[in-house]
Structure formats: structure tokens, C-alpha cells
Image (cartoon, rainbow, N blue to C red):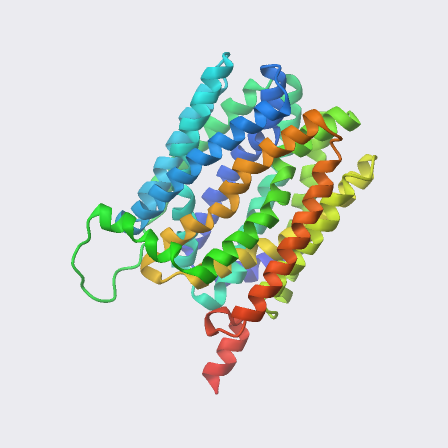
Length: 416
């Protein structure tokens, strides 16, 4: 493992590792809090999963707006400032949310946090694509997955113990870590926005925002977005409904839930390098179908199994899909995007997360509060089947285009 890390370090530029290091610290803060957010809301304010789902949904609606604005600003002004802004907002929101005692105030504040805090997401992904050539992006995004999951080993484990003692410590810890990350970004991270190849007339902010019309008129890209949304509708349940489901149906406490989540992170750390080497040799849309297949198996298992070892086994199956799908989806989004619109395309790609966040927790809450909670996992399995068919259709229609050929194939063609 250490030898793999050393070789990987030599393959990427120093600035990439600055991005990776600051991202690692920030993800620890996020994962201290995020997996336990629905638990906190339902316990603190004595509400059901439906109400918690509405909070998560409205937060995601606001996040979609914030991400849209942030993507345009990142293409216009650069990545670094937008990332700093997002970290400062995250720190302030962590301090504030932890002390709110009124449900309506928490609801309103979460909308504001979603609007402001999501502005940095497309800038961060665009920065990775800026730093790496096309043939290195699959490995680069895979490396970011490994780094993120090192943080996932730490974050939920600590978060589970803090949540069992006092949920307030989760918010305070997240705020502190966001502040530290912002200071490191300010001191160490340069701007990576590509310079225009030709000198062009400076466009207005409105013209920059209007540039989203290009992405929204890219119908193959939108088809990829819709297929991904179906997949992530199932996947995102592990960050919202799963913790409440395991607590209420199987009486799993936060520490054990943290252990289950950490098993996913450990799997990624051990195997992501090997998986990335395999998937980059195969058609990317077929890899997305394969990832969704593993999601279908893993999440459906939660509707049938009832012991902690089997909960962990289901999470490992899900993680196999995650190791295949997450790097591949980022590479595909970057492949669709023209260089000068990279952050805006990444913002639209963010719909694959924000739309499921809007719909998934709320819909799952309705099912869990009014019907058999196991239906959440059965419905998720059906959605995955539809997504698998959609990704296969995209492979048939788009797979032969040069921009979606794997790096090894591109290099071979260039050599000829």
C-alpha cells in the first residue's frame, strides 16, 4: 500500500496534492456530521423522517441554486475564491445550526446553508479537471475517492461517539475543521482556472450565467444526468434514511452505524487503486451500469437482512459499485464539458446529487412513516434496474465517440 501511494504521488502535480490534502481535512469535518444529520433532526426536534426529509429536500433545492451560481462564478472569476467562500460559510453554519432550538429556525437556516455552502462544489471538481490531463483524470478522481475514504474511516467513527454523547460537538467540530481548511487553502492553493487560448472580449456575469444554456441544450449530457439521478436516488439513502431505518427497525445505535459506514471507507482505501486500473480499460457507460448493478444488490439487501455482519456485507457490496461509479461519473462529466465551461458543466452534473437529495429523503420519509420501511430498499432496487438500462442505452448511442474512449485507447490511436 505504501509503495502504491509513493508511485501515485510521483504521478500527479504538487498542486493536486494540495487540493487532495485540504479536501481530506474538510471531508473529516463533513463526515463527522453528515451521516448523523437525520438522526439529529428527528431526535432533537421530535419529528418523523418525513419532516427530516423535507429539511434535506429544501436544503438541496437551495444547494442546486447555489451550485448553479457558484459554477458560473468559478468559470468567470476562478476556483480558489469560490472554494474559500464555501469553507467560511460551512464554518459559520456549523456554529449556528448546533445552537438552534426552534424547528422553524433550523429549517430556514438549513436553506440558507444549502444556498451558500454549495457554491464551491463545481469549483472543486473543475479544479481537479484543470490540473490533470484527460488520460490521468480517471486515476485522479479515483485517488480523490481513496483520500475521501481515508477521511470516512475517521469521521463517522468519531462522529458516532460524539453523537452518543452530545450532538452539539458534531457541529462544533465541523466548524473548527472548516476554518482550518480555509486557512490552508488561502495559504497553499493557487488558482487553476485555464487561461483562454485566444484573447476574447470579456463577457458579463449575465452572459456567463447564460452559458448554462449550452449545457442544458446538450441532450446526450442531459440523458447521462437523468440516468445518474435514478442511480443516486438509491445511493443517497445511505446518508439520510439508512441511519434512521437501522435505529428504528433494527435498534442499531450511532456507534454501530458509524462502524458500518467506516467499513465502506476501509474497502475503498484497500481496493480503489486496483479497481481504477480495471475500470479505465472498459467503456465508461458500461462501468456506470455495472456500478448501478452493485447498488441494486447492496441496497435491496437491507430490506431482507437483520444482523450487523450482514449490514456490513451489504455496505461492502454498495462500496464496490461506488468504487466503479464515482470516478467514472466524474470523468464522463469532464469529457462532456468544453474547457471554458467546465465548472458550469460540473454544476449541472451536480444535479445528479441535488435532485436525489430533494426527492429521496422526503419520499423515503413518507414510506418509512406510513408503510413498511423495507419498501424503501425494494423501490431503490427497481430504480437501479431502470438506471442500468439507461446507462446501457447511452453506451450504445455514445460509446463510440472519441471523447468517451478510454485513455489507453486514445493513446494507442495517437501512437498509430
